Amino acid sequence: MKRTKVATVAAVLLTGAISLAGASSASADFAPQARDVVGVGSDTIQYALNYAADGVKVGANFSPGYNAAADARLVSFNALNPSVATTDANIHDTITLKSGTTPIVRPDGSGAGKKLLYLAGTENAAVNFARSSSALSAAEVTANLKAYPFAVDKLAIAVAAPGTNAPAAITIAQLVSIYSGATTNWNQIGGTSGTIVAMIPQAGSGTRAFFESQLQAANGGTAVVLSTGLVTVQEHDPSVFTTNPNAVNAIAPFSIGRAGFANATGVVRILNGAGSFQASRAVYDVVRGADANKAYVATLFGSDGFLCSSSATALIKAAGLDQMASPIDGGACGTQVSTTAAVTNFAVN
Image (tube, one colour):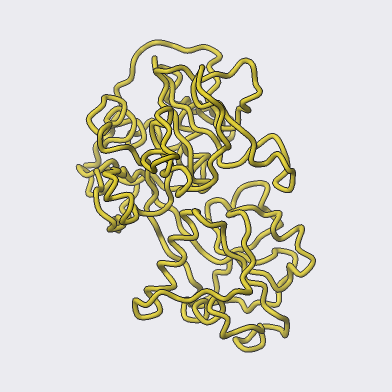
């Protein structure tokens, strides 16, 4: 029988507490305190942590988050300024991580978030965890970071929903050819004639790291030398299609869960024809090894913590992800990862 768990949290009700990652550093009513658990990083999973913190309404029902009954709040800053359009110059604004600290430029992506946990000259003690949509790198393992998986995402290829010259399916082998620059026209792989516009997420993106690892695996284990003609874009941003005059020829790796969000509906379409590239991946919260035994890590990220509890299942689902099953139920949720090996146990609740 599947065990139902409810995380143990402090029974102090915080009325009106604001901990959405989207709160701007300019918001006078929002200042995370020293005891709050603050995270930054991945765009892919930012909404899962937002909802886990403050809850979310799905249909007629509101599912409360961790902060409804917590003393130290869970605070997760979005990868981008949510108050402006992605084309706005202030999209990479500054944020104040905790009251009394010096504002920093908002970290954009898994890599940027994790660097604040360890990298000399970049590390920031006000960051308690980083959201990551990719496994630990060799440098991060050397720095003694620890990753805690909590959900499963699926990456696929997106095209412009109104119309595309791409075929109904693009295999991983074809993606290797496209992203290396060997295939440059859709008519080479069964699409309508048009010069391919291959887009790839920004440097430091966990989605980019994962996508490149998939290309490498399909290339016999040899890293694919990426074409210099690739277009670098913000990951999971539908506007990279709407603002592209050649969107009919464009493709980009895209989270299937994020493609289901309202801002992507009718803008992007996931290719799901027979043989289409789709790959499941674990997503993680990452902490310093020196912090791994602190109470908040077990309370939030451990296998008996909030993110692995039944209280978080609907919150994570609302963010387009599937909550991992806990070890007692045959899953990997909340298990500590200390190596570069990605979690491949995708058992979910």
